[in-house]
Image (cartoon, rainbow, N blue to C red; front, side):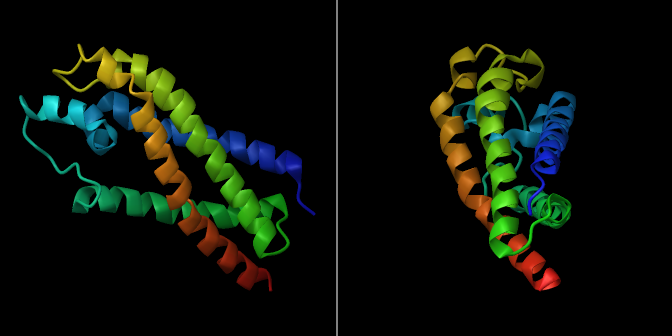
Length: 166
């Protein structure tokens, strides 16, 4: 039987860890996450700074996202075990449920509120682009991609978990 107290605690801990993983590098060096900025902000930045890989399929971005997916997969196995998942579907439900919570938290709070209003995360030379930083549609669409991408580690993790306990 699933332990909902553990699931809630896991969700809180994972959300805090995700926030730290995003905000610490972002505040220290906003260019680290340049691939997640809207295109118009990137282009304004590159007018006065050296162009760095920022397309989704660049080696740099794929390496960052790939490492994050591997870490998510490893954490998923621990999370579903601690939550008391008993088969593939319970493991998938717990893992994907937490993934979706963090995905929407990222969009609705980190992107729409913090990212849009924190001057510390603005790329140099784009501080004046308030409208560009408040693009809700851009972040919503990116969040929808996150919903789809999350299926990969959650399905794989649930299958591995079901195989391990099977």
